[in-house]
Image (cartoon, rainbow, N blue to C red; front, side, top):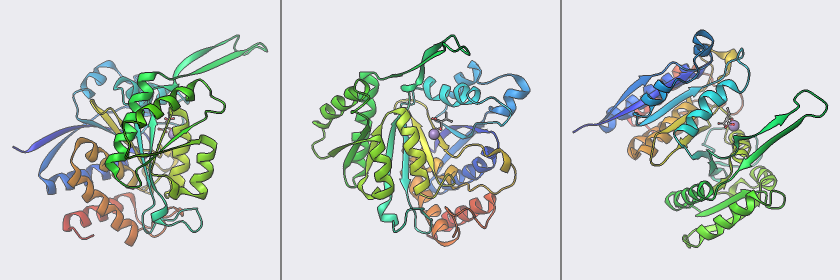
Length: 357
Ligand code: IPM
Ligand code: MN
């Protein structure tokens, strides 16, 4: 029997829809090649929808998304909606509601892509960041007193639970083993200052490490991780860290792999509904102009297929994209593509169809 998947698509705002439609094109291409079927269900959510209807993310939509095998998200963000409303109301709500406790961010420099790091080659930049995705500063614990007065107090606390930290660290060890490269897992923290939160992280990390004697472990403070990512990115294989530090270091990492046009991530609940997205944002001023690189969205589709176990299809996507990056898009990471969003999608599709890599 032909395997069927139902994928919920949230194209979202700005340039989200145009990059997602290229991703869908590529998903359909590899599904055809590998003999499975994907049924896409589109959901109209985001800033436009909110402004038109006042709706952010209705419960009935959450119930329907829960029935899908995965969620494919374009971008959320609108220039006329106050910052925080859509981020918290859609993106973070989905992460929390579906308990997507892993934020997985592969960082790889492909041949043909420019990195701002002088003298660094593709073999030097190839690591994965595993960011805890449901706790820390993102929980929204805290509050304010006497807002707007000279006596104002604002408190925002980082929540770290043993269970939440441990499941993330375990995932990272398993991932590192499965990735089977340098087999080195680096904990990124701040044990010298955040002596409660990262004490919990460090103890948990060291305990879980005993179950993985084949994995080398390392520790670095988050500020040092930033330094080394620029100076010696080849030191990293897999990095595990908390939500806030993960947010920051993955933007830095995106820049050294060629920028937001390439960077993609997965919000993963290994036992539930996961969500995959290009991380670049909605880029409102470029909406409809066909100038945004769809590769980040296509890589998001690749991570989605890997996560649902369609490894052969995922590998085809990677080969097709690597070919386009190597042979066609000479200026990625330097600001120009030389092709429209749709043309890049068509090139990738063509290479996959003819298996011309
Ligand atoms: C990301 C984004 C989000 C985050 C924002 C949009 C809330 O920056 O996915 O990294 O901070 O997690
Ligand atoms: Mn971010």
